[in-house]
Image (cartoon, rainbow over all chains, first blue to last red; front, side):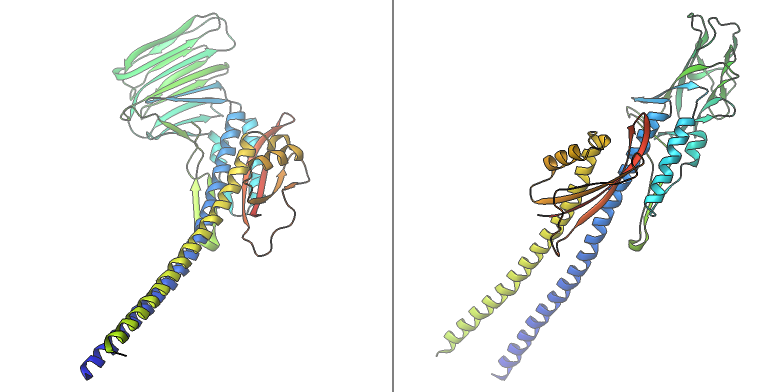
Length: 269
Length: 135
């Protein structure tokens, strides 16, 4: 009988211990749930704010950059005037930056690189399409040799005729097509299998399109105004449609009280 | 009373006690989770509505009447909402609300969006701050 009493007491004690443990677990769970909820709300707010900043920057780019971007299967296309006038974009980006930072001290926008050379990143290939305003040029530069070829068409805005046409080519395995077209339809250009790591060049009427070391290509003008259409064919991306972004980390949001930080950029196409 | 009867009553009491403990725990957690999801839903509702107002061009007109009409059409019946729109186009903020009084001690979801828009042939920047609370 005394043994039964001991077992009964032990059983009751274990039952009480289980109930107590469950209560502690439940209490801790509830506490962490509360913290997680606050984080979840904060993260949602941060994400929505970030999306609105990305949308705004994309809108400013579309309105004021003077560059139109297109993407297709393993290709990225850019159209722009050369030289590019970035006055409008610089002004609107500057005002936007000023407004946002003065309205929300948790946000930092790093638009200096954008306002200087407007680098556009083709992902996933990491190819940069950028401007050099002082040299009146456009450069397309891959970070590795993942280019299948370039197709560059330059439509001259001033001259009626092609007055000079200089060609230099190095044979290889990449598709290269360059055309400089005057307003009367005459042109200077060619399409060939080139070695884009070597020097290739087509020049006419003050416009020069030349390959540069590292597999890049540069379109520059010494004064003639033109419209430049560039098509970059990518290698090693299969049937993937590339995306074009502004440089990484141009948007920074920090909620230091909650130790939440987010860096992002704007997708343009 | 026989020992068997005492054992049965004791067992029934134990079952009732355990059921009450487990039942109240489940009730407590379910309700808490529903509240949290409801709060999150309020935040998402606020952001979705401000995003729609911005994307469909309603905000660009900066007309209080037009924005309020669209807000009333979009806002679920169980919520109230207040918008404060600041822009570089006008020095004064535009305040639009479906109800001026907030309920005491109720959860208020709030957030902010930035936007750009064309007004008088120039690009302007603005921000919308929203507050959503249950009706």
